[in-house]
Image (cartoon, rainbow, N blue to C red):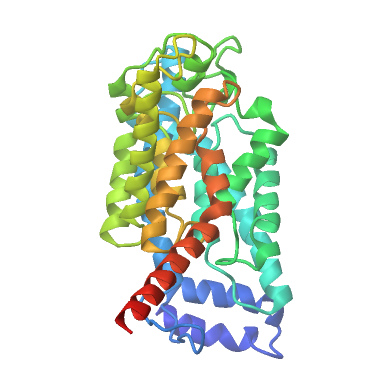
Length: 388
């Protein structure tokens, strides 16, 4: 039925059709709903039955557990600080009402720009924003204004993606570039105690929360020299303040299992990030920095705090901006985990660290791959000389 519908309206979008100006939109919708019958004609040595849109769809599915829990978490904290006895379902729908506008704005602005660029360049719409459009709302605080989110999305799509040539050509992770833009352009809306709690009276749950109510993240408390008010169990479950999709280790682990089972994400990169973070955090623990509370956070809590797990699973494993050689993935992942903890401990003004660590290593991923390839070439040359 879907195929017949697209076959019927196709002539209107083809050359000389009355809707030819929207050919890229038509092609994008058709290939999203139906597997395209075209294959690569050049530049590829391995062919697969699955196309890029299908791969992106699996990543979106893997993100859903963290997204749904993030929605519930928003409603949960709103009910807690509003002193309302609300059901789990009503708390979820409250979080849905708060998060859905952010997702709509992200896709509307990002896909709108991609549609315009694709039509202008007379190319197909690239599918990379299917994931980026969902990632960006999940890594910002719940209190981020919609207009600010729209600016970040536009900046990310234009300057972190399209200027490099589009999907597959970008150096930096577009979702993290959007967050970096918000952090450096509007720091008061990305940090502090007031940005982690929704104050909007949505669906009648919570009403108007008092302006005096604040809710610091565990890392924010530690950076300020205060004792953390959350236990390790809270960090694993995710019932604590943080960005919308980054709090629950359990939900993120479900997404990681999906990515690894479908072989979309590299386990080498993912595991290396956790190993690098654990090793450096442990070294800080035994070093005895008495005046630095972040350095004294147990290494296993470091891995569960902030955006560490989310970054390791969904950001560091981005196949476009990460290392692509097998050995390089170990180095790339280890350095991300190590840098994230170093930034947390040594920079009290920015206790998170994961965003900057991944963006920094995005720059060095090609160099890591180059070194690995050259090492293999030199090894084979030495072997050939020895055999002669």
